[in-house]
Image (cartoon, rainbow, N blue to C red; front, side, top):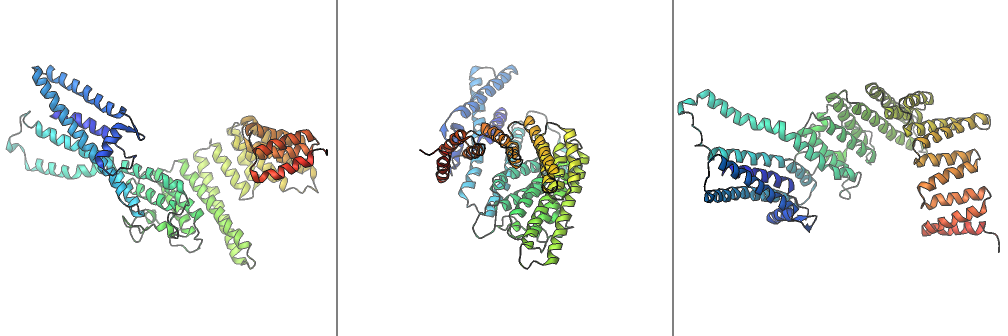
Amino acid sequence: MTYGLFLGLILGVMAFDFTNNVDRSTIPGQVFIGSMTKLRGQTSLAVLAMFLITVVVGLIVILAELRTDGLIRANEQTVAAGALIVSVAALVWIAFGTFIAGQLTSFITEQNTVGRILDIADRLGAFPAYLYLLILAVMIGSAFLLRDEAPTLPVNGASYGGLTALFAGAMVVPALVAYSNLQPIAADIVYKQAGPWDQGGSRELAPGTGIQSWDLSIEHYRRSIQLAPNEDFYYLWLGRALLEKAKSTPNTSPNKTIPDDAPFMRIIGNEPENWNRPYSSDALPSAGLSREDLLTAARIILQEARVINPFNTDHSANLARMWQQSGDIAQTELDAERAKPNADPARVAELAAEVRRRYENASREYATATSLSPNNAQLWNEWASLYLSRLGNPDEAKVKLDKSLALDKKFSQTYLLRAEWFLAKARATDRQQDEAAWRAALEGAREELKQLLVVDPNALQGYQELARIALELGDTPAAIDAMQGMLARNPNDWNILRNLAVLYRDARQITMAIEYAQRAIALAPADQRPALELLVQQLSPPQ
């Protein structure tokens, strides 16, 4: 019977792994049988065969050991022992598998309110505990069955201190096991449940409630942190979700309920004075927070991640990105304020200073990130982009780009940003007063883009920018070459074909222009064909 229990434990672990409810059945027995005999809804006995092979191999090993030890001798004893072992193992296997199936069916029969969805994640996180309980049950059952196999201590051998230690251990060990073994696994399970909601983004779950998919992913990440507070990975995802929620929230009130110096428990704790979300409730506090509160919460969480693991470059880099994105949000508010007919100069100045402050904070975080990982060309490029497109300091951007290029000459993004640096220089140059400098800047951008295509011949943006620069310089043949490069990688793009038709027309190559226009007509949407047909008519010689 003891051997049967241990073989049943092996089968129970396998049942834990393979029992699923892809058919969304509400009958536990049907779920268990389907898990053994179906694959993606189609009959398949492969899983059942794996279990049966395990039974056969396990039975052979056990019976061989029993006969070797002389515990069974006659064939009748072997058959009887084998039948008992298989019966006990099958009982454990079927009972535990059906129990797991029953837990899965409960998710189908219950109504999926917001609170219930989060409870499901918690209950899924508890599934590994069922496996521990199975192991404990097998241990206790085996101890009971083997109680007469070894001499026991005399009654007076159990001292008061020994019994006290035994009782204390029985109380403390389960708590330690739950904290060190089960909670980290549960945290990872809850974290994975956030995935579908994270992909839903700003989609509103119930019209008029303001609850987005981001709000549910935020709650899942919060719960993961509560279960594993020292795992900085979950902080990164929570900070990202809060930041994305801030970008899409309609609540742009400048009023803040989360102070800048709030501790991270203000976001993690469920207490009324903190996040204020009781367990099993449908309340999602993030749905009612303003954009500024969400940005503050994201910063607090990302800073806490760095406290946990200060030498992880990702934390400083993500803080830099957070400040940059929050600066972009503030810039949007600034642009909206400036666009008002009666814009308040004081408010405009306040917003402009806030935008500048956030971008400068981003720069400081990039400085920290690059000091931790000085050979990371990606970080140098991001820092350069901040100076180029937001802080308006092209000289500082060039220093960062030169550093990035020195680190990695095969990183295509670097050449794209260096081309953007030259284009920004061209835009800042008055062509009327200094056409030579303007042309030199465009030629510099063109050289960088050519280097980009050497490193990455499939970089479509490089061909697109080359065509645009060539047109600005009046170099139609070069623009055609760039467009042909795009077409070679997107042969069915009607828009590229149309552009080539126009370019060949401008180059006075009418036959080629007509050919490409006709190819565009064959691939273009119906509403675009009349304009292309008109182009062909204009190009065709009169009959």
